Length: 342
Image (cartoon, rainbow, N blue to C red; front, side):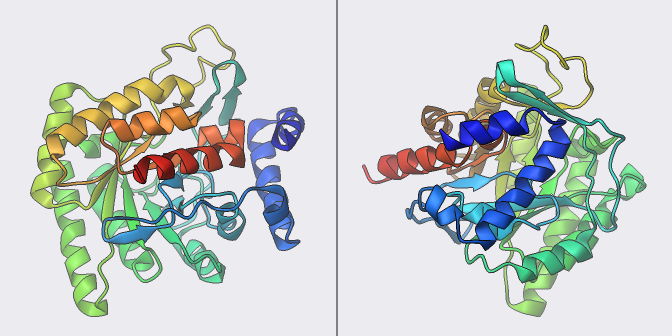
């Protein structure tokens, strides 16, 4: 009830402005010790995936806390793990504003942020300031100014930079808002990218004695043949996990709504079924050899359970958190914990 009141106020402002206002307010409440009074405690239902122990199966998806400034506050909202970013080697402003749009009738969001972030050095400093003791994933990407054929250089720079502070690293090759990025999901470009990152992973492990898993975040806009090709590449390169999925180009189900014609990726409830189908196909092809983290359209505990039924081992929430608040995180974590204990 309280969150509904807060949301009604925030939704009166521009989407990006209210997003920033909400995060700053969350930090203030956390600093004052009020979040623990307002929200239910984190569900303690440990699960091991990628060799890491997660507090529960419900994580925050990348994109909400791009610069890792709100980890401690967000961790008090019930999440079992936090993924920050997408971060690039150097700071960049992202695309022109406005670039974030709410479609409340469909519990959806369209964004074309364009990897706006303060750069990897700032993110590292912010993570080091955090007192959070749970799993932190860091989502990495390429700078807008870096040519797609040189993208691997940016990913290698980011991976090496965050290796010491990340519990796992996500390779974002599926954002629809950086020109040419999704071409990295196919053929030789993908093989080269993953092979070089896996070599860097071994090198860094040898130097530090610490293995940091690599996950790949993929798009929902894939054909069955493309999914089979991707699965084969992921298995051959021994990638540690797949995050399915990012936002979609599709406007199915929102065609007649305000902002539906805006460019960018669509997230939220309309993506639920298509994203879950991608999860299901990958899980069948992987046959338990690679874990899948499901994200896309989770608006209820039932949605989270559906992702798990499709084969996912963990779930992440973004748009659902915007629309439903911490209560959704608690409900999903509770439902998945109860299902886990059966």
